[in-house]
Amino acid sequence: MRTVTKIGIIIIVILIVLMGAFYIYTLDYYRADEKILSVLNSDGPSIERTGRLTIIKPNDENDRHTGLVFYPGGKVEAIAYTPLLEKLADRGITCVLVKMPFNLAVFDINAIDKVFDNFSGITDWYLAGHSLGGAMSSSYVNENSDHLAGLILLGAYPLNDEDIHTLVIYGTEDHGIDPSKLEYAHNIFEIVGGNHAYFGNYGEQKGDGRASISRQEQQDITVSKIMAFINEEQ
Image (cartoon, rainbow, N blue to C red; front, side):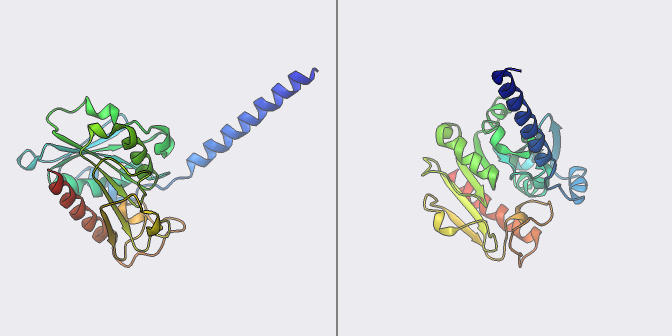
């Protein structure tokens, strides 16, 4: 067997092993807790699922014609953020939750582009993301800020000094956040007692700090700060 052929076979084997390892890696992710099903079947804001999008609409009476697209954290089941977004919909915001390929936003940074054309009547769009989803949101905004009214990052850093109004929210017990690295953030809010995982409903996260407030309280504070941010921009 020629040397070139042997090298080719070795490369193919290595690629197969790497692909297999990556597939196994993606199977280990944080799943939404069982309470999410009750939210999806609730009588609150209208919830519609189409393709990789979960759309949570406000009631007609309090519709603010404002949209928010949400990128989930890395290896977190997207619907784990439904309770947080339902609270925003209760306040008149149309929320579009994106399910990412392999639960990793890095594989579809431009997902929001598929959202714009499918909604009429939205006058202002915001892009939000948690953790890796926040980093990828910041990456998107770096070259596409003209389409958006603001960027909202939960437990994530802005990647650059964005030419867009940006809100950063993080918990004091989030062991993955170093406040000294928030040099590019101009609008920062620290949730005392909050941690990394409590922005969503997917249990505890490895390496995270122990929150001294409840998950619901952290999400209520987050929604309050997001609404204050949106009200400032409109």
